[in-house]
Amino acid sequence: MLPGLYASNIHKYTGTALMLWCYQSYYLACTVNPGYIVKSTHKEALRRYKFEKIMYFAKKECKTCKFEKPARSKHCSLCDMCVEKMDHHCVWINQCVGLRNYKHFLSFLILHAFLCTYGFILGCAILYGEVVTRNLRKITFTTGNGERIEGTWLVVFQFLMQ
Image (tube, rainbow, N blue to C red; front, side, top):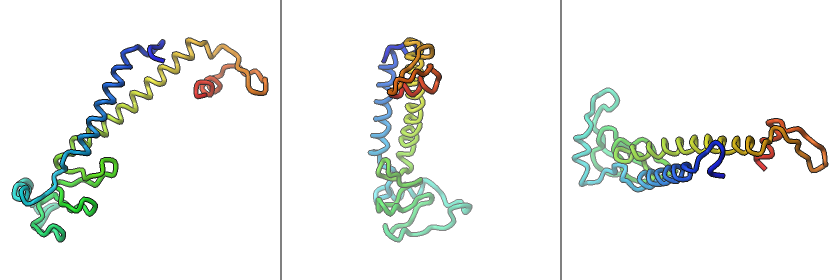
């Protein structure tokens, strides 16, 4: 249905580009290390955030990983690793959202929300173009029983959805 009366041919390309951008953000959110704390990154993680005695009081040891727990880190029971500045474990990306992949996760959410909005608006423009092109508001529809119905917005919507 592209191009249409209210939707130009450019939407074939912008929609495709936006979808590819969404795939890229999803791939990065799934594959970028969220900030797992291992022996090689432990000292850097301890220096990154200080215990300011407001939310993070004292140094503690992670009972599972058996090393000093950096401020703002949490142990994920699903990943079985400590994560720097852990937000949550996300089932959509099948890993934790933490210090290093948070921006990719946010771009994944924002881009998909934008794609849904773009698709809804484009779909409405395409359908409204069909209403105008076919003059659906002025014609009479016939039901399966042979009953004739004028083209109200509800009848036109039902016709378009079929």
